[in-house]
Amino acid sequence: MAIRATATTSGREYARLPALREASREARGVKKDAALAGLRAIVERFADPDAAEAFVLRLRWPEGVRCPRADCGSGDVVRMRRRHKWRCRDCSRQFSAKVDTIFEDSPIGFDKWLPAIWVLLDPKHAVSSCELAKMLHITQKTAWSMLRRLRSAMDTQAFADALRERRRLSR
Image (cartoon, rainbow, N blue to C red; front, side, top):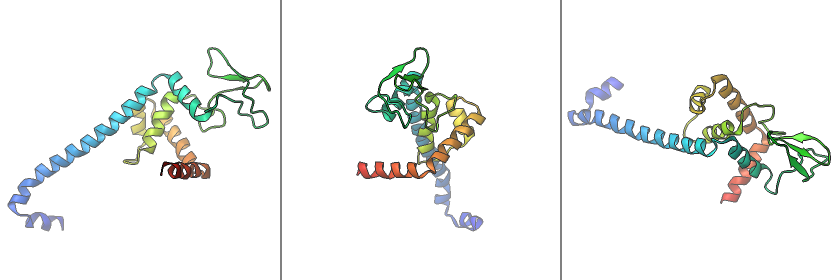
């Protein structure tokens, strides 16, 4: 069928095909550039690990850091110097912003996790671990592990409920 369509195309339409192909390539390039510009903005915003962690802390504990243990929950916590951890004064346990999340036991900082989440949730295109590795300047194995964790978290009922609630509130 492709041969017939090409054979029946008039000379004028056939002459426009290279121009249409070029315009299509340019349009795709613009979209890709816009997506990359958004990624650059996210990466620049969270380039500092402390800024990225502060963002996650504001999302996780809007009223201030609290002990994540279910039986404690105290707000009497102390930031430990030189470490990204807190110590609860009531139960004397140490914890970080990653505890009880998908980021727990991950040596990867929030400065890499947050752009990865942005890329994964971009509805315009899917991303592979190779592409993510190039974008964030990490190894492909690390990118694959991050995507696996993020996709498994997205499959949970809690994520679906939170997304449904977010959509309801945005209306």
